Length: 88
Image (cartoon, rainbow, N blue to C red; front, side):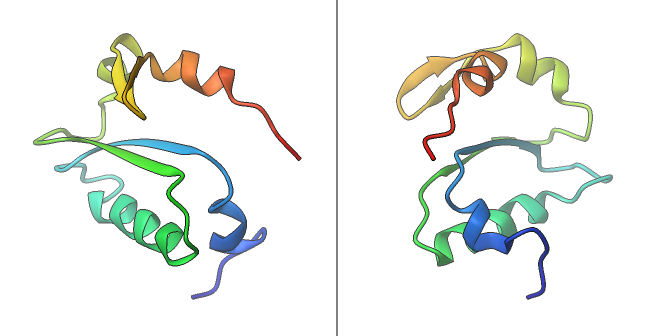
């Protein structure tokens, strides 16, 4: 599979927390499943996918106003994102 910017191997080294609605007609839910599978091919367990059953494309208000478990800890996704650091 052709990719750009280092491909899935490079992305698999980055922590990813993805949120996706199963009924999203703009960006198919299967795209997130594919990304998760590609990262796992490189031995990565750095991606966590939170699924909104029945959710469409406009789930951002639910995502950014809520707290969700990531690695067993409750986080607001924005707070989690801004707490990430580059260890290289």
